[in-house]
Length: 373
Image 1 (cartoon, rainbow, N blue to C red):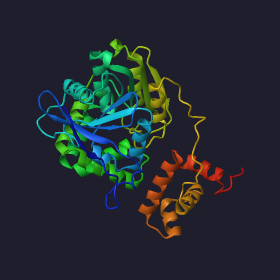
Image 2 (cartoon, helix red, strand yellow; image 1 turned 120 degrees about the vertical axis):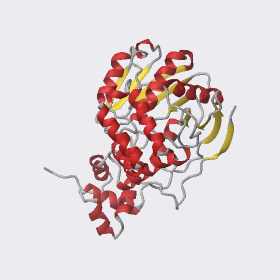
Image 3 (cartoon, rainbow, N blue to C red; image 1 turned 180 degrees about the vertical axis):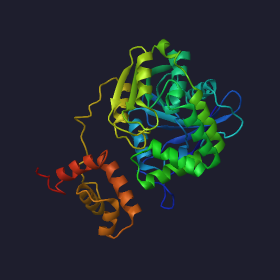
Image 4 (cartoon, rainbow, N blue to C red; image 1 turned 90 degrees about the vertical axis):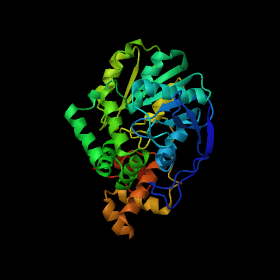
C-alpha cells in the first residue's frame, strides 16, 4: 500500500544547491511499508519499461533533486523508461529508526518498492552499495529482473580497503560527521568544485545522521555476495570508471569474472557517482544496455553552445586559455564561488568532462584560436 506526496519542488534561490535545478516536472514521491511496518519513500519519473535504481551510499529524494546534474541524470534515465529510485531505511524521507542493516533487509526494501509501484518485472541498476542487494534480488527473484546493471559496484566490501582503513573512516564519521562527510565527498566526486563538495557534504549530513552513516559503512564492509554471482541468469552489464576513487577497478574485474556472460565496460572517468558528474558516460552505457543496443557515444549530437549566457561564454573562453578560477574571478570582478557555479553550469549544458574537453568546445565555438605547435 502506498501514499502519494506532492511533487518534489525545484531548487529555489535560497537553497544551498550547486545551482538552480533544471526545469522538470519532477518526480512523484510515494510511501510504502515493509512487512514489519517500516516506511519507505520512493520516487517515480517518466513512462516506459521499468528501470529501478537501488540506493548507493546515502540518499535523500528531496535534497538530491536540488543538484542540477543529479536531476539531469535522472531525467535522462526517465526519457524512455519509468525510472524509480528510493531512500533506504535510515536515510532521507524513509524511516530513520528501528531497523538493522542486513542483506536480507536490503532485498526486502527493493521488493516492497516494486510491489507498491505495481512493477512485476524491471531492469535494475545496482549502484555502489546497491550492487550486492541487486545481485541477491536477481538470484532470489529471477523472474522479476529483465536486465541487471552493476554501476560503480562490488561483490565484497573488503575489496574497498583494509580493515584498518575502514575503521579509521568510521571513527572520523562518528566523531566528526562534518569532517567525515567532506572527506567522503572528495572521494565520491573528485572533480567537483568547492561548491559541489560543499553541496555533497551537506547532502550526506541531511541524508543520515553520523550513527547511521557509521552503521552503513560497517554494513558495506561486511557484504559479500561472491557465492551468488555464478548463479545469476540475467543479462548483466558491469560499468565502472577506471580511476574510481572510492571503489577500485579490481571490484569490477571480480564481478566480471564471477557473473556468467557479463559485459564489462571500463570507462575513462574517475568519479564514483556518475549520477552527479558523469565523466565516463556511464548513463549512456546504462541506457543503451537496458534498451538492448550498443552505446552510440561517438555519433551523439552535442550542444552547440547557443544556450550559454554571455557570462558563461566568457568564463569558458578564459577557462580554455588556462586561466585559474581565482584569476577568472579577478578578471570579471566576481567571486570565485560564482565562477565555480558558472563552470558547473556550462559543463552541464555542453556535456563536457573537464578542462581539456571544454577547451576543445571553446575552439569549436570560435571563442579561442587553436594552438599551433
